[in-house]
Length: 456
Image (cartoon, rainbow, N blue to C red; front, side, top):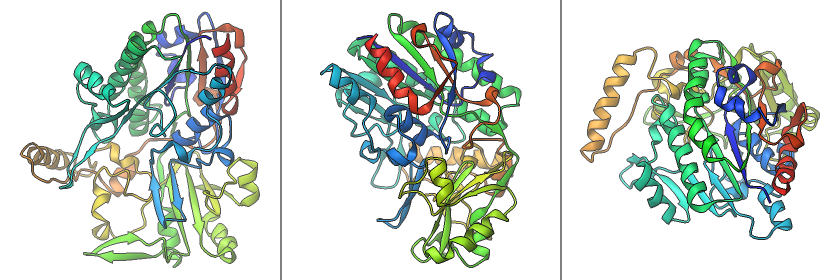
């Protein structure tokens, strides 16, 4: 069987590929194709579809997070592979070839997957509340191999105001090490760099092209190391320009549908008593409605909200492959220039303290404002960050309170989640083997493509 390298270059589109000659060369002797994505066009559903061949209604990953009804909690960015239903591509490959080996380098839902080598970001959560950069590996010895060679995983370059090329570089070098030392049959590599400046500044900003060129240079050694392997490059979504945050939870609260509880003067979403609330995820939002009798009125309210383009009811969810028990009773799609905030408080003075920090596991929705030092006062935010780092180095507890609220939301210039309107801003697939050339692949066809390439 042919060995494969599969690169998930997040946010890659034909428009950005024009600035990436080394990546374009992958298709020079192979092919390039349009890649149809899934709704929502966000990381966890798209990756799960690539690996299972199923839409979200089949594998159950309806967003980067959702409301876990059995727990009564909104949880984003879970890591256990058991959440993903369906047969994975490597499981199908092992039917033909027992012993087919797989390395997962930072694709999502890596933990607990039945692969041979796993590398995924995983901070050290210390008992006193501090969070230190690190990664999780399986087998455990791989952690020391990578750390000795590359240094500690640069967590604060992976997400947050400091997110940048260092994390993608570390991931690429880790993949090179795994291929050189362990030689997997299938190597999956997630490369996040294009997510950052495109969300900060929008794809039309010159800094988007600069980010693409910078990443192309970082990818070159990995592509060289893949000589003799078939290389597949794909992306989950394209990022589009936006200018309008939509506070759907505030709309629901104003109508008495969303409720909060208060502790120490801070308001927290109360999903247990709310009649309706939204889990915001870029340009889509799942709206969970406790009483079925309220669904029509909530749908009407959401449809009348500025920035909401479409409200999917049960039939709409079926039509888009989102009819899964984890989905909200309603799913909202934003206007092309809009995206959904998770904000539910009406006074910033009553926002929970986690709203002003990078806290992807406590916020009941996605928050791209975490990519900025508070735009309302960036200098002060950076000074607070510096003081927090000094406390951290001294072994003291610290709070990295640097994220803006409304000013941060207004600063966001790029988002994703909708199905693309323009092929130039849509996902793309590159392959070094011309045998499977087609002009277009759907996300649900990637699994079978990889199996055919592996058997070549």
